[in-house]
Image (cartoon, rainbow, N blue to C red; front, side, top):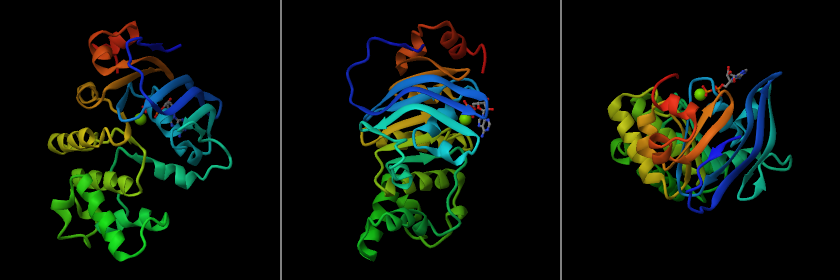
Amino acid sequence: MTVVHDNLEDTEAKMRAHDVNVFYGSKQAIDSVSIDIPQKYVTAFIGPSGCGKSTFLRCLNRMNDTIPAARVEGEITLDGENIYDPKLDVVQLRARVGMVFQKPNPFPKSIYENIAYGPKIHGFAEGKDELDAIVEKSLRRAGLWEEVKDRLTDSGTALSGGQQQRLCIARAIAVDPEVILMDEPCSALDPIATAKIEELIADLSGRYAIVIVTHSMQQAARVSQRTAFFHLGKMVEYGRTSDIFTNPLEQRTQDYITGRYG
Ligand SMILES: Nc1ncnc2c1ncn2[C@@H]1O[C@H](COP(=O)(O)OP(=O)(O)O)[C@@H](O)[C@H]1O
Ligand SMILES: [Mg+2]
């Protein structure tokens, strides 16, 4: 059972997970997790390494489908629609629910192509001018345009780590997502690049529902409004970020935030 704080204002749920279990073979990694992911908020998932944060995050855009041993049970909806419906187009789902990984993973293509690829395959642009406009808008929104506008034909992999991560965020934004999932997006970055990504998350929140996994409690406190604490595959506690960090209700949450484990 998850302890959910009772002082949460009513918010529109963009996504809803109900009683989700995940198994890798016979090993259970997620145990009966239910959560509403609010629209226009940043939700942080925290907890010790191996507690299932990435596994649960991957449920939200069916990335676990790509892991043969993984089996997901329970219900997850996006705008009320079951995302595990066999009739659902998974490619389209992953455009609506974009993902940014721990290690920046630009395609080994030009900066321009990294952004243009998604809108092209999803048929978002009528011609070159429209595509150019989407590329510029996405890079601007990701705070990268000024740094790359004169080198759009350079390889995405030639950028610095922090720029690559912003490129990956721009790539996610380019297909007009509704939710952005980020799995420890700053853990490979230096403090300055990290600060830029955090600023970017603040800029983007309000426009998208964002879920970020982070092992940095300071980061969770800086960027999120809601926090869920995971432990051993269970979601132990969920509430306003400020309350989770200053006034946790569960001993296990208290132990984690005071550095007793993890
Ligand atoms: N592809 C996989 N195959 C088998 N077990 C996995 C796989 N990915 C994760 N696990 C296991 O599931 C549990 C949760 O892992 P994970 O979701 O990566 O945790 P976290 O992101 O919180 O560190 C761990 O016990 C981990 O070893
Ligand atoms: Mg992880």
